[in-house]
Each structure stands twice: as structure tokens, then as C-alpha cells.
Length: 252
Image 1 (cartoon, rainbow, N blue to C red):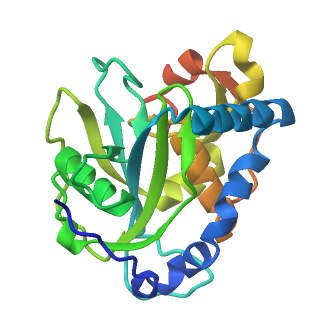
Image 2: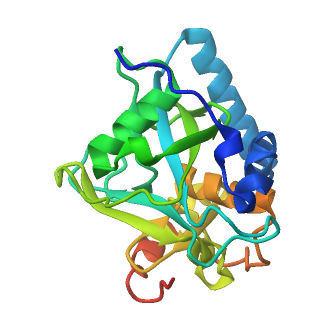
């Protein structure tokens, strides 16, 4: 059975303090991007799942890496965020960029243990190098039926990461934080013409399109930490159109 892993927010670097100290504001920043009718649907789905006891518990690792020193009012150029792309052959969320993570096992002692175990299984990362700092609000993801807890963590040097199982993961990458902040890499994405009102923040990078729940969380964190720069929220693309741009216009 996995032992409980303590949260150590005091072990984060100064440049992460604006996010760690205000992590409770992330849910509101997340919801601010949702139209009122969409927010109502999301809230209703969460309430229904809670009443029925539906859904499985899950956790994802939101790992920032970078220097231990640096001013609190800006992030260092070397800072990065660990992201994966799911294999195109998977039944759920195929080809989608995501934080490493997954469903809780019976032996996991809480979401931190789940996030660390899953990240190691997916990326080979040495979890002994990581410092869990905080957990974000538990969120119900209706399409997959999971209650997901993002676990915010930091490492000055996480060591090597790589795809462990090609049947599950296509890409493992430490993406420069500046790539997410760059307004040129930002857009809004929706899944189909019938769901245009569900458009959410996305990031078009060299190897991936980060959208959906992961894109929402990253966007909210940038807002709360004060790192976000003004970007064109009127650039709204359908998912297939946006995916076709991967490798063409994306940049870091």
C-alpha cells in the first residue's frame, strides 16, 4: 500500500509562490472562461454524479521544473511543465495532450500518491526528485466519468523522462512555460459545430495541441499566477481544424 505523501508548499521556489499561495483561486479562474449555460451544465453533471456516487477517483501531476532561485514577480526562462500526449489507439481521449496521471488504485493513499505513481508509470520519472506542493479542486470530468484532483508539484531537476508504454503514451515532453505564456500559441477550441459554445482555452505547440481539461487548468494557472499575457480569444477553431495545425504553426 502506498504511504501518504505530505504536501510541502514551503519547498517551492519563489517564482512559484504566486501560484501556490493562491491555488484556491484556480477554480474560479477556470470557471470564468465558461459561458453561463455551459457552467450550469458542468455544475449539474457534477451534482448528479455526486448524488449517484458515479465516477472513479483519479489524479494528475502538474509538475513545474526550473531553478530554485529567482524573483517572485516572474518565472525563469528555464521553467517548464511536464505534459504527455496519449496514444492515438486508446479508446478514450486518444491523441489528446494531458498531464500524466490516471485512476486511483486501491493501494493509493490519496490523490498525491496516485499522481506520483501514475506519472512514474507513464514517464519513468524519479518521484523521489519531486516536491508535492498543493492540490487543486477535485473536478468531475463528465466524458470520462472521473473525479480528478490535479496535484501541483515542483522539482529543480526531475531527471530524464520518456515514453514508457507506447500503447498508452505517444509523447512525453517538458514544455517550456514560456511556450504556454506566448500569446501567439493561444487560441480557443471546440469539439464540433454543435458545441461551439463549449470552446475553451487551448495551446498550439510544436508537437501537440493542449485543450480540454488540461488546457483549462493551464490557462487558469497562468491567470492566477499573473503570468498570462493578453491573447486573441476571438481565434476560435474547431478541434479537427486546430489539430491540423500541429507541427505547422505551433512554436515554443
